Amino acid sequence: MLRLLFAGCWFVMGFVTLSMTANAADVPTDEARAATINMLPELHLLQPPWVSAVVYRESTILLEAKDGEPAIGRLAFAADEILTVQSADGKQTFQLGNDFQLGGDKKTLVFPTTTKFPLIKAADLYVPTGSPDSYKHRVGNPDQSLMYHTGSWFHDRQVEITYRRAGGEWSATKPALAASALPRTFARLREGQPLTLGVSGDSISAGGDASGLWKFAPHMPAFPELVAAQLQKSYNAPITLKNRAVGGWSIVNGNSDLDKLLEEKPNLILVAYGMNDVGRRNPGWFKEQTKSFIDRVHAAAPETEMILVAPMLGNAEWVHTPREMFAAYRDVLKELTGPGIALADVTAVWTELLKNKHDLDLIGNGLNHPNDCGHRLYAQTILGLLVAP
Image (cartoon, rainbow, N blue to C red; front, side, top):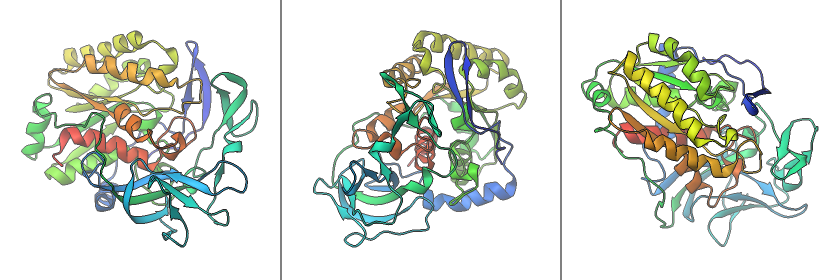
């Protein structure tokens, strides 16, 4: 399982990267893989919101805009029918009409001021710089920092909603099977041959902030293991995961570590950077670094294929995750796709959901890590390239 290290922040080449908690992941044991496979039916990884009329386990915080006002949770789409609402750990269930109401726009859950479930107050989102449990600083306001927590703090304040959408088409790019771009991968999978899945990435790929990393309910692993387990289940093929992601890493670190990753002889590599690189505000540099990674893989292991993973959006109010940079960084990755290289556009998926949601609905630490729902979105986006729905 993932090894817990520390949370911290340091300066590298003039920009800030957030080290989460995770070193490179160990290879999952057979027992751990079996547990993940047993979990798959309740995760609905092959029924993402761009495919299914039912949205499964979408997460939200309950945000109280002002003292004494009802707390509001946000849905990505208008709901025709609420099926289940439960706490993110699965230990509490909430009933429509008794515990909450569906807002008139059908896109909000309204919880009364008397609810016992922990709320987040809008007044607490931004605190004076230097405050405990914070990271500096807020966009345009160096005197304010953003609320930041590790562990289960946000998880304990998020609920998951399963609901039937009231129409409304998915307007963003939809992941599509990449059989033509990844022919060797598909040949191995369809023939049930062993496949080694390599991962090069930062703290998101290393597990932050999946409940399985912190060992609290529901103990869901991070997206690389979700992808590996679903591939094994879908194709009845042995999938070996070699995850060398480390918290705080940039694409520069991925290039430095590439020889060690290639020693694992991966058939397919997930290349998942950007969150710790967007602060440079230099998409051209990111493209050059990623191209160097690709060229070295092609030179050393020409049979190895790759999926470039464009990341989730960091908190729009954090100076180190400038919102406008994510699409620009994604676009340069798109320019690098071609034979043997596909793009998993998590950036587009995240952007679509945030049209009606708050950043913290999908974030696990307040800044730049996905919660369980976010890790499922990562896995669903990647699996959309590899498994027919």
